[in-house]
Image 1 (tube, rainbow, N blue to C red):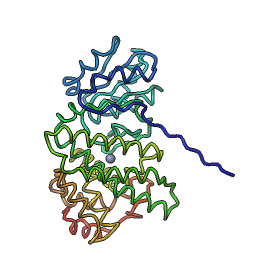
Image 2: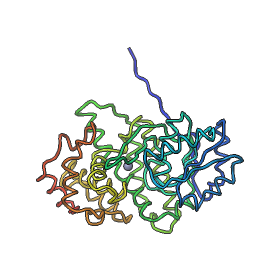
Image 3: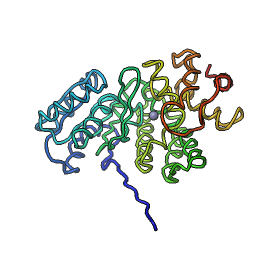
Image 4: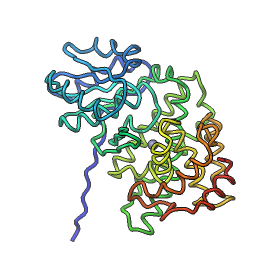
Length: 348
Ligand SMILES: [Zn+2]
């Protein structure tokens, strides 16, 4: 008997380009939502673009958050209920988007993603990550109903945020390899479409490396397009597998043992260099990943991440404990093997 089924949740409207922020209310109108919007933002995005959002709606309350935390999620949930909001609009980098995504899940309402930095694929995906104490909680929620990515705004974000977004996409290479491996060894469900889309996204980004430069609005365009298709790959897969493998486990472990040291994308990029080495050996494709990262100005070493060598090794040898996700790390790599991988790849 045929008993397969799938439920793919995608953003309905994706607007990308110069000045599209001014089309936000038009994009929202098309969604036929009921009720008033509620704006979730943080101080600097609010300063830069808050009024441009508020001016487009008759009745809109807002909250500005200093940090992403479960407390912030509660604050948004309470304030949005108080305002009788019909849906949320998240304006900002990672924090307001992560918080609004989680709050909208709690409120049973939709949210619109208006990123002001192209720093990671959470601006499009259904995954939300919130720090709690010395760890981060990754929660599955619905993806945004719409994404409004104004490249004029995104190009003004600090350059390192854009290189972090690039590195998050480049890590799709190893994420897909881990997913295929888990499929072969552990019979984990694999989607050819999602795997191919995710890999192609990374290839296209690397192929455009020459146009990814500070001060070029086109850079923001290329990265955002890649983040959108990476998010779509995750939606098709119904999991973060197409964009999250051992390199993400490594990064999550760094978040635990050295919180706040480096950006998510930069950590997964460096992780990807080493996990590619585990996949294909000393003469493998890890040099391609390293070269692509360094061309874009993303870190390729522990030093550039601002993390000491011991911490890198500790994260690499313990990353497999993070969650039940089979990757090239298997049941863990030995300290000697980790040191060798990190040394050969020049990470330490
Ligand atoms: Zn990521």
